[in-house]
Amino acid sequence: MSLFLQVINSASEASSATGTAAPSNEVSISLLDMASKGGPILIPIAILSVLAVYIFFERLFVIQKASKLDANFMNQIKQYVNAGNIDAARNLCRSTKNPSARMIEKGLMRLGKPVREIEAAIENTGKLEVYKLEKNLGFLGTIAGIAPMFGFLGTIFGVIKIFYQISLQNSLEIDTISGGLYVKMISSGTGLLVGMIAYAGYHYLVQLIDRVINKMEINAVDFIDLLEEPANS
Image 1 (cartoon, rainbow, N blue to C red):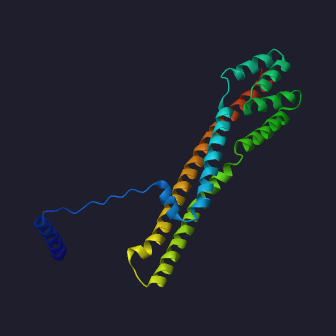
Image 2: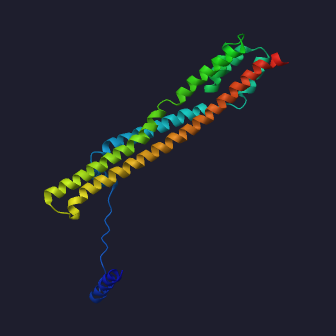
Image 3: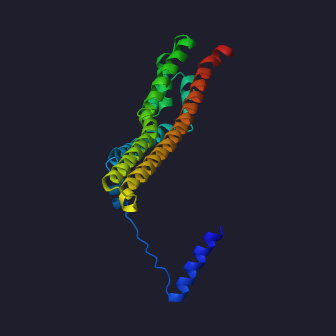
């Protein structure tokens, strides 16, 4: 500890003696320059990042569209069914571009059959609608796992480059190992960043889909209850 203080005191005394301060060479680096120093491993990471952004926003728009449903939709269905106007109820379902509406339409097409059969038809339609909502969502989860692995692969390439340069120049100067360090740190950091973004986007979309599924289940239960009301009365 005392040796460290002596070095600091010596540096400060030398600076005060000369009357000059240590120059601050702050050099900024652009993202393009940083990417060029990261090596070719950044190419697949960049492709994964583009795919992640595309899948996220494409699924986001689809899920948001599926979550929009008129609050009076089920009330109108109940009025039409109670009045015996099944055609009007089916037309309303067809004009409403929504998973719940397609489920109810399938149930209306099965009217006159046992309730269990109608319920099974609605459930099968609901599974197909959920599959449509989750389309390509698995790729986003895969990107969340693969991108950091590419970054780790870049870390290995960087270490190999460091040892290769050391073997060529037989030196541990910073100029010798800086190239490998750039590859190591930039690739691993970029891979982790893309993975984190894809991971967060995946779970956010899963939460939105869960909300849509919850609404679908509520509407399906309301429709089945509507069919069973005359039998209970």
